[in-house]
Structure formats: structure tokens, C-alpha cells
Image (cartoon, rainbow, N blue to C red; front, side, top):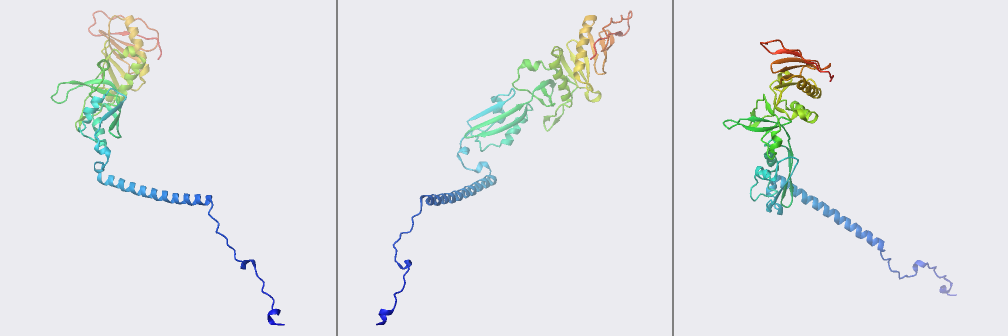
Length: 332
């Protein structure tokens, strides 16, 4: 037997068998994930680029100012000025006060400087200016309301009336109806002072405004007769003097609420008209419940308690004003 016949054949494995297999293609879900990942990367790069460009633009604005930044807004002149206000000022006043150049542009405006021009008048309490592109400037105003008026003379000028607000600010007053301002009482006993060409606020005006507001709301029939309000003794004695069409001098005290004083005054005036033919000359409400009063030719002490009694008859041929007792029977 030959050797070739006695040798056993070698064992073979399935791995030795050649196989023609194509690689598996990428699925649709895999392709979507790959595209999404690429888009996300591109978006992040674009965002970083936009932030970088924005930073450069802001730095250029801060460095060169708005006038040097090119753009369509800078080239377009302002076409309209819109006014929003709670008072009497109109658009013509805004145009005159702002005095914008003929070809002014929104980006070329100095808003802080324009706001200062509006506040100088005193009638404007707060102001804000807004650029509305492409070519509109919006002005929002909050105005002061006048509570009294005074006559002032500036240098060699002739005296002219001014209005006074609750916070004491004095201003000319533009756009108000003459009937409304003519109904305001005049102020007396006030010394005006200027600082850097601006009239300083009237001291103590808030207290006076409280009295006027209380009288207007609670006793309008009395308020309509008030002509002059004096602050001459407000700081020193805490008293406000009022002159009306019927009474030369009425004194209010600031140490007591104004409402009970107005109630006493109303009752006193009604009682005095019913009991005396002489007109009242003076009423002092500043000392509490006992109200000293003076008629033309007579004086009286009127405690604000007890029934109204007959006034004592004056003595014959008085060389001086005579005292009477006038008691009012209502506790306030």
C-alpha cells in the first residue's frame, strides 16, 4: 500500500468556503440621524458667527456713536412727530420746543438733550422720547396740573400771571382754557427765587394744595368764592389765610385736618347770615373749636358747640368794635 493511500484527508471548516456577501446598506433612520447631526453642527457654527458679527457691530456703535453707523434709518429724515399726553399741550408746542433740524434723522437725535428741553417749561412733569423706525418720533408726556396762580414780574418785564402746581413748580401754562385758569385762586405772601434762570418751587405748596383740593371736593360752594390764598404766615405760624368774595380774612390752621375747619366755616357763615346784617370781616379757624369772628364794626367769639344764641347787643356809641357772643350748636 502506498503512503498516499494511507494518509487521511484534512478536515475543512465552513469558514474555508468562499462566500460572496455584499455589505449591508445604511438604513433610512441612520441617514436621517446623520443629516440631522450635520445640520445641527452647521447651525451652531452659524449662530457663533452671528454673535461674533453682532459683537463687532455693538463695539462699533459704542466706539463711533450712532451718527457714524451707516444704515437706511440714518439716511431717512424724520417725517412725523406723534404726541401722547395727559394734559393740555399740543403737537405744535412739541415741534416748537424740540426745534429739530430740517433733515434730522432718528439715529442722529440726542434724546436726552431733547427731553431736557421739554422739562424746562415746568408744565411737563415727565417725558420720554421713542424712535419708531423708519421715520417717526413718539413723545410721551405727563403734565402738571395747576392748583393756583400768581402774578410775577421778571426784571424789567411787565407783571404777568403764572401757574403753580401741587409740588410748587411755577410755569407759564400753555393750552389751558382761560375759564379754568381764571377760576383758580391767586397766591399771596410768596417770594419767588431764581436759580440758573429757573424759578424755584414755592415752599409749602403741597399743604396749600391739600386745603384747596379739600375745599373743592367737600365744599365747592365755598371754594368758588375764594379769591386770594396767602402763605405769608404758613412757615412761621402754620396758618393759611384766605380772602373770599364775602369775608376779608379766613385763617386755617395746619395742625388740624382741613375738613372739620371747612365744616365749621360753612356752619358759621350760614348762622352769621341768618343772625346778623353786618358782613363778616374775619374768621379764625386755626385755634380749634372756639372760632373768633369779626364783623364790620363788631367782633365775636363763636365756640363750635351749643345752640345758636342771640348776639349780644353792642354798647351805645362804641368808640371801637364791639364784642358779641355767637354760639354755634354743632359739635364737629
